[in-house]
Amino acid sequence: MPVIDTFHDEETLTLTIVAEFAVLEMGVIEGSTGAINQIDGLLARSGTANRANSQPSELS
Image (cartoon, rainbow, N blue to C red; front, side):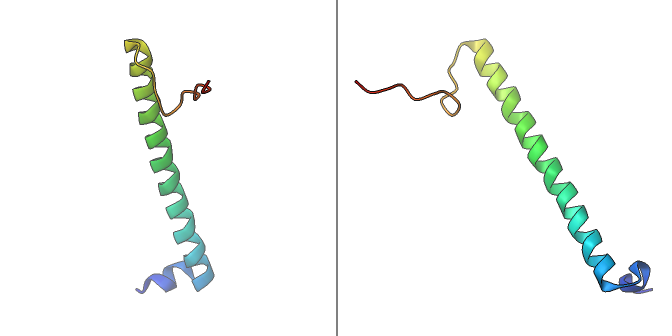
């Protein structure tokens, strides 16, 4: 049976594909953020400044 028959129409198929990619992308973003937060925590505990998130010092 063709996939289009399973979803009854092209619009439903398209919306389903878009929704699945959105969920996948959200998981990737959340996973990356979690990994970055873990690295930040390790750096903070080790006393190493995280240059990416630290505020730039003013130049005199």
